[in-house]
Structures are given as structure tokens and as C-alpha cells.
Image (tube, rainbow, N blue to C red):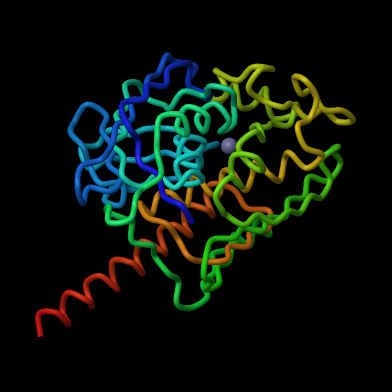
Length: 289
Ligand SMILES: [Zn+2]
């Protein structure tokens, strides 16, 4: 996998998908050894020192200072997909802007504003999974499991019975260029039957026909038509990739998700972080001895 580094500052602004509020996020190159850091007006914190939750409709990152940033997953997917692991992310407002409801606009700007890391420059240290692990939600019949692998690959299965989505399954292997062409253009989606309850819960206020696909009982409302016949499952892989960015470093694993969502993605990321911290402290103890 090729890694990239930002060459300057990049600003994204617009309404948040759920809050509908005007939001702004500024990205700048990270300093030596910093990795991925996040700030919302209270100083930069390493991403792997934050906590997070996927129990709402999207993901939310909680900074040690108590502030949070909602819906980072489409930006994070673009950063992961392009291999950018040294970056300062400063948010103004409660959410990352929705932009086009996928990762295409993020990817284009990040690609134009970055360059490949050269030999001899600081590289991210991947986290290699050494044994299989799984998280599940038996109530929803949902499961995510991960197996050791030399790179990162994702498989996803979704089932939306009684809708035009039906069952979709897809695989994705991360390689230079694969994210931008295969996943980034896949838009977020909602069932028409859910939209009213999302709005009642104060969510999806920034959703619009331009940034979201709405699935009716027998048809699909998508501006310009669907971009892929399996756009829905591709968007789920985009979300999973974005949630795996919460590790703050690249993952070497094969991740397989069945009917999952942000909640299980985040629980898997937590398990990886726990393993990574345990491995790190064992290494420190060994060095000490
Ligand atoms: Zn999404």
C-alpha cells in the first residue's frame, strides 16, 4: 500500500448530515511521530486516545477534553483509502460536513493536496492481527469477524428484505487507486420508511436528494441514478473502512461483516485498540527487562 502526506492545509465546509449545522474541518500535515490527531477547540489529541461510539446513526468521536465530533466516517474512509496517516484534523462545529454524502469530494481534494511518501520518510506502523476475533449482535443477527492477513480486505453482506436493495454482497481489497474508483462514489442511504423517524430523532437534518439515496418500497430515489448496481453494500464497506481509521494506523486483516453497522464496526475497532495497547505494553515491559 502506498502512503501519502498532505502538502498543505485543506478546508472542508458545509452542513453536517445529521445536525444540519454549518460545520468546518481543517486538515493539515501532522508533525513527526504525531500520527492522526483531532481537535475541536481544546487542543490536538491522538485519535487512538479518543473514545468513540457507533450507536447513533453514524459514528461519533469523543475527545479527552469532553468535546465530540460526529459523522467523521466518510472523511476517515477517504484518509484510509488514500493512505494518509499523519494528519491534524481540526473541527469547528459538531460534525464533519456531509458534502456529497460519500467520500468522492473528500478523496478528490485529499488526492490533489497530497503526495506519495518517499523512501526514508516516516511511515505509519501497521497493526497486524495475529489471531481471529469476532464481535456480534445476536439480537440483530449481525456479526463482524476479522482474520489475520497480509493487507486489508473487506467483505460485506447486507439484507434489506422487502426493499429494492434485497441482499447484496461484495468484496474489496485495498490497493493504490482501488478506494477512489470502487468505494468513494457510493452514497449514504436511508429507507423512506425510516426518514420520518430519523428527523423526529433530530437526525438526517442535512440530508438531501443531492447527498443521500432514499429507498422507497418499490423504487430508489437517487440523483443521477445509482452509481453502481450494488452501491448500497459498497457504501457499507466505505463506512467500515472509515470506522477502522479510528485505530489511527493501518490494519492488516481480512474483515468480514454480515448485516453490521457503525455499532459493530466501532466495537471491532475497540477490540483492535485494546490488543494493540496490550501488545505495546508487553513490548515496553520486555524492553525494560
Ligand atoms: Zn456512511
